[in-house]
Image (cartoon, rainbow over all chains, first blue to last red; front, side):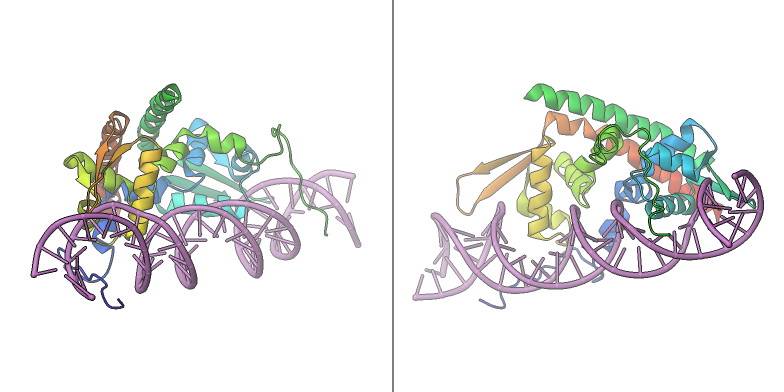
Length: 128
Length: 128
DNA sequence: ACAAGTAGTTCGGTAAATGATACTAGGTAT
DNA sequence: ATACCTAGTATCATTTACCGAACTACTTGT
């Protein structure tokens, strides 16, 4: 029983895997934008008081996030148009982060996820 | 300069890392439930026609998902109360998956994520 | 005796995300 | 001269998610 592998191509036009599925699911794409471990926390923090500096964000994450990760997550949010970064040519350096207009449209979505979680977790805890 | 490591504990009561932050962010918790690569796709597929069998789901994922991964994702969705699994004592085996009532409450949330993505991607493509 | 069908499990591997730690630059305060 | 401040980089290690391929159990059909 060596070559009984099922090769089932029905419905697959192009052999490059995952192309269709990965790009077809809108929610998967949303997760790519805000699915990072700290991103929603960061978006909320920047939304709550704007502008926010790098060090403030780090402290607001209770210093648990590393600088490297914080930099990465902020850069990705900037690349995806969610936040704006403004660096001032001072020393010590000062960098300010703000939500973009596009980023602000995320807030109601985040709130609806929070609302669902509240109802869900309440329901699950009652179940026991 | 060896021991200039900043040990900054302000605001941290308990030394166990991440406890506060990880559980405080509702959205992060939501991602734990539906953040798996195939979960939203599976939830949608099971919602669209119910009940759904294991093999049907695999085919609907265009056979790109492996059986191992499909099993894992389904088991987690079941553990989290989103879907119900019913196995029939037949041979060949038959297993049916359905959305639970709790799982059905996910549908509007998923739709709102899809709606946001549509607006977002439209806006981003116009920007260029 | 053997293959087919379903819903898995098992083993081994890889890539991506995140973490820990140390280091940097340029100006200000001591 | 040296230390401090901010906003990072650089390097390496670890964890987690997911993939590929093979194997399994049980019963019916040939």
